Image (cartoon, rainbow, N blue to C red):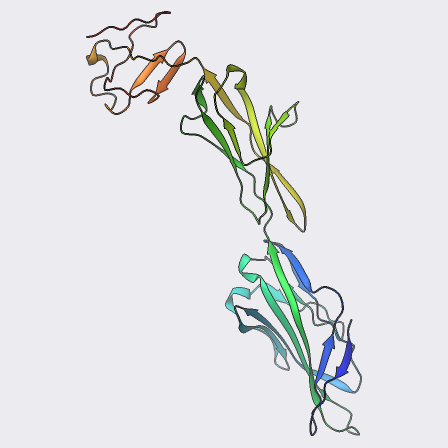
Length: 289
C-alpha cells in the first residue's frame, strides 16, 4: 500500500503519484502464474474511471490491459486468454498473468485515473502511476540428456572421450556428474557439464548420470537417465587383411572396421585397407590377400 503525494497542478486538475516502498522486482516461472501488484486506498469522494497496464520493453510502451466503463480489454494478442484483474476489492487493480512466456519479461506500469463524485468539491481528475515494476521470468531447468563423444558409449581402452550433460532453463545452470545409478551408492565424479576421460581405463566402465540445477523462484534439480559406458581392449596398431571379397561392396572404403578380442573399433585407425578379420586369434598376425 502506498500513500498519495500531490505533485502540483493547474486549474481544475490534480496530479497524484502512488509512492510504494520496497522492491518492485517480480520473479515469475515459465508456464506458471504471477500477480503484478497495484493497490491504492479508495475514497468515497472519488470514483475510478480507468485502469491501464502497459509494458515497456526496449523503450517502446504498449498497452496490455485496459478497464473502463465498457469493460475489460486485452489489447496485445499475445496476452489474450492469459491476463485478468481478478480481485474485486476496491482499490486493488493488480494484474494476473497466467501461463507465463519468456516474452512476458519487461517493465510494467499500472495507471489509474479517477474523477470526483462529490458535487460540492471542485471537479478534478488524477492518476496513480506505478513505475519501476519489473517482471523477470525464469525458466525451471529441464531434465538433462547425456550425449557421448564421437566414439559413442563403447570406447577402446586408452582412448580420449567425453560425456556431455545438457539441459535447458534460465542461467546459471550448474551440473554434477555421478558414477553409479540414481538411488544407489553413486559417487560424485565431476561438477562440470562435460565429463572428460583423457585416457580410458577398464575401471571407467560403469553407469553414469548427471544432475542439472537452477533457481526458478526456488531451487530446481533435475536428474538424467543413467547411461552405460563400456571400455574395451585396445585396438591393434596394425590392421589385419584377409580376403577383400568378404567385405567388398558392404562397407564404405572410408570406414575401416577392426575386430580385436570382443571389441569392434570403427574408424579408430587410419589405413588404406578396408578389411575384416575372418577369425579372432589370440595373437593376431598380419596376412595379405
